[in-house]
Length: 161
Image 1 (cartoon, helix red, strand yellow):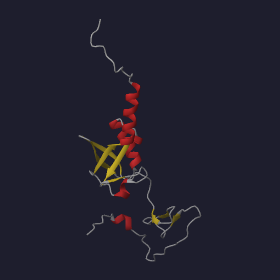
Image 2 (image 1 turned 90 degrees about the vertical axis):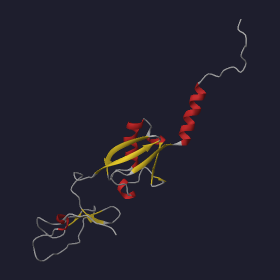
Image 3 (image 1 turned 120 degrees about the vertical axis):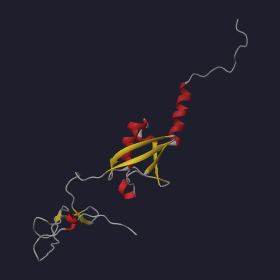
Image 4 (image 1 turned 180 degrees about the vertical axis):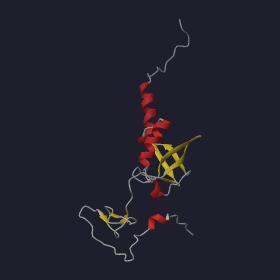
């Protein structure tokens, strides 16, 4: 069973008794009106062709807190619900010190792409995301550190004169 939460003012119609819906849209994918009046529902056509209710800016954007597990530590990060995993990586780079390209984020057991949106994948408030360091880049860092160290001679004198 799924509970749908909605506000009654989202579905308010104009006060006129005849509800006429016009289905005209502009060539740039603009608004499609639904009646005329103060309580009208405004529609827009998304680039994929989907007709959706138009939002008034990002003022009502929901902010969620994501718990990020990194080995033995936890980080609570507040981020917009409609942000991408790439944007979450940028925020985590400030907290952990790992660059975004060095991070791998796992949610529900699967690695997520940088272009995946949090709300589309199903990340909600107080959900846990696992942060792993990319093993290939970790290995490259280790090799670079070892290569930078001077090579010691295998022969050591036992007695110094």
